[in-house]
Image (cartoon, rainbow, N blue to C red; front, side, top):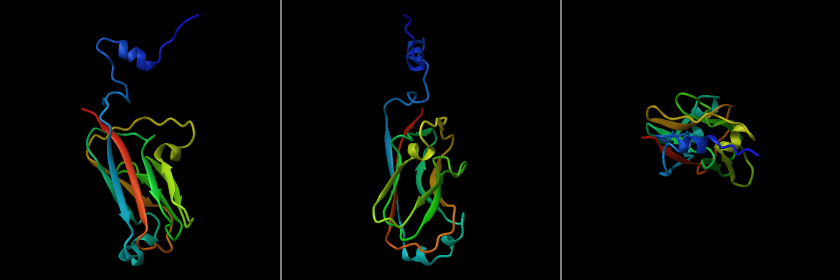
Length: 161
C-alpha cells in the first residue's frame, strides 16, 4: 500500500519550505466590518434606481491582502424592496458574489462569499497588488429603499509580506 502526500505536506517538507496560497500569510487573520446604513437621502436619490448606477464602498483591502472567502460574509435585514447586487472590487465587480438578491423577507439574511460562488466550485485565490475597496454594486433597478435598513459586510483576510 502506498502513502501519498498532499501538496501542503510536500511543500512543507521542501527545503526551503514552499509557501502555498493559504499558508503563505501565517496565522495573522484580520477582520474588517463594513456597515451601510441606508439614509433618507439615499432613499430619494435617483442614483440607486438605475441598474449599475450605485456603488457602495464597504471596506478597504490593503496591498497584499487575501480574502478568506469561507469566513467572509454579507448580512442584511429587511431592505423594503428587492435589491440585486454584486460584491467585488475595482478590478472585478463580482469577484466575490454575483447577482445576490436582497429582498423584503422578514428575516435577516446571511450569505458567505464561499456559498455565493456555488457548491464545490474552486476559484483561485486573489491577492491584492494595490489597495482597493470591496464594494456593493446594484445590478437591477431598485424601486424603493427603506431608510434605516442595514447591510453589513464581514471580511476576514490575511496580508502577505
